Image (cartoon, rainbow, N blue to C red; front, side):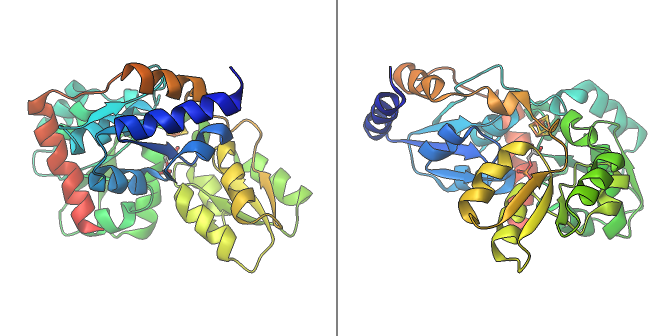
Length: 303
Ligand code: 13P
Ligand code: SF4
């Protein structure tokens, strides 16, 4: 089938099913082009919380579709590629977090949305890269705040919030793999460029950044900035919407290695199959869902 044919079938089925297609900013261009909404994790959660569509087709990774399912128990949530996971989300289990809660019984637990529903269900509040400082600040009166699963996000929060923060030693293999040497090389090759980084990057990389943003924060910044050249410290998929929003500006990946294979799995054919079969679905057991929902809603109410 030709791409145009696939896209037409998707549009038709989308209407028949009363479906909405949500896509993360790292998705393949063909997916971003058919999506009803593209955004960062926070924006996608908000859109999932507000939609009245009967079916949500989530083009992203598993935890994102799971968050949509937690917010929408009555709607069908499809993840066109069930094998699209986030390695960081799998770095802590519910049992690990139970042990942490025993060790620090009074500490609020701030859990990055890049986590499983079971881990969210054991948490006080969720956060994303867009609101982590606000969420942690709101808890800074506690003697200790525990953050999971991303150590780099916790270290980023501790740069900005006066709080005693303990954290789990998880990380995103893509962002953690960006090294200071890569940034220094990119800066040497593009001396006039502004370097923007994602908070999942290592502290020594954050130290070199001119600005730190979530993926959608980056998109807004490059569009509105007076600068016309940027080094991008996040997954390379973001370059597509950047070029779309600011076609006359120049963008250089901080490292060509920053490719999230899981974010690249979904194709338009997968989306078509999902809409045809209404599979694969993502669901969350009700007891887990209720507790995870509480942590997600606390975050959404806060920001
Ligand atoms: P954002 O919420 O900034 O889009 O980040 C999601 C993510 O998975 C980054 O690796
Ligand atoms: Fe997970 Fe990193 Fe991929 Fe984001 S880029 S989905 S944090 S592995």
